Length: 271
Image (spheres, rainbow, N blue to C red):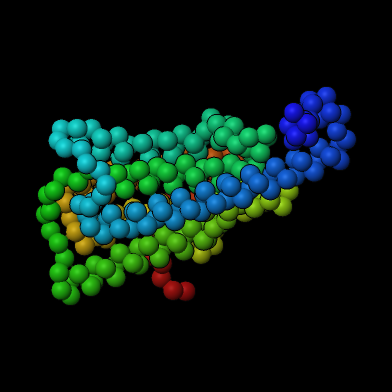
């Protein structure tokens, strides 16, 4: 009993702790939360990216999903729709309030970008790792055509990485949240992106993400369903994002929107 008393002091003694002692305990808690959330975020993020690259390289014909028709249609449809639906919901005002509650002890607002990256990574991991393949292969690139398509696939991913970097890699990867908590500061969000790939189109992340779904060396009914659905989301989803930008940045956003195309770069002649 004496040992337990030392390990678990009475509640009255905890409540009598000085502000300095409570501050130290809260700081230690924040450090632990930051490291746990950061490790989970980047581990899941890496797993999701690898799963997506590999699954689409084989045209969604290889995965861990084992459902057979007709249940495979239901399962795949659920996996395919959960990403755009939940992704859009979490980017709304309601979703941001939900994200702020998904971390303990008032750290939710600071960790919101990290939590969002964790949820998005889990969604992508479920979609691409647990898809149930149909077993039908329409076309497979070979020889020099395989090399050409592989180069296009690699370039589309490099373009996605560049666009994410231009938008603020610390936000896109979830780094901003847990590092801010680790440092004990409010998250310093980057300004509205207008440089790099954002000089040419307003939505380079969504455009390059959609591009990755079409530059693949194997085509199946599964890959077509993924490409059409995710491309439709990438084309329509940013409209909600642009409404938020209009509210947040006002005239600066409207000026940028007026001179920058939405998805397709404008061909401009040299002066």
